[in-house]
Image (cartoon, rainbow, N blue to C red; front, side):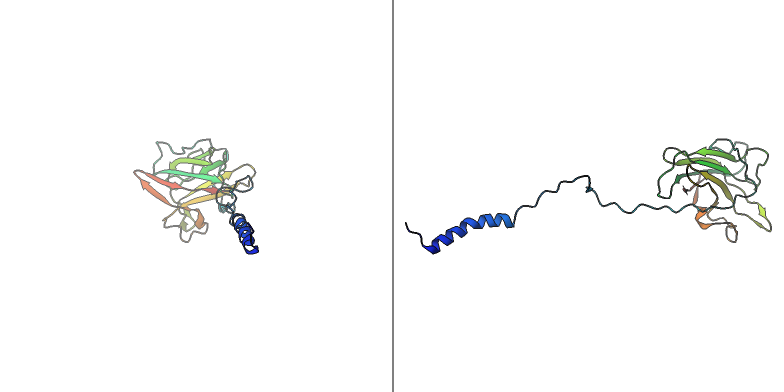
Length: 204
């Protein structure tokens, strides 16, 4: 049978159309993850934790305090305090085995300068955490006015400068006007039963 030129071209077009269709609308190549392309969301910039402000050491520091997390004894009068927190670096990573050196006044505002009352050192755990049991410090006269209640702390971590600072209690009426208070060192706190609870994270 003789095929006309028009019939030949029509038949050739019919043969080419599926091939062209397959080439034009081919299925997308499946994505295969590799080590250079994370499967989760793109990572954000490194977190940054601001370093804890330093504060005055004061005249009552004594080196060599005993290693203990409970500074208070049954004989000590005053409201009990539970202070917890974490020691972090400036990239917000916990620092294990950091040393905290703690000292503060008793409920009447006096320091034990002869012994080790309300003084101690402790080490952070593998997650940088610490927990201290003590009492809420009293206030004492500094010149013509009382200093707000405060806790002295030195933080020592390998490869980092020693931090000397103080912690204050939110709501203390003597905070306003005190020349040494730094706002970032004021702790929130709450009372549960007979114990005052507070937390603070140190960044060094």
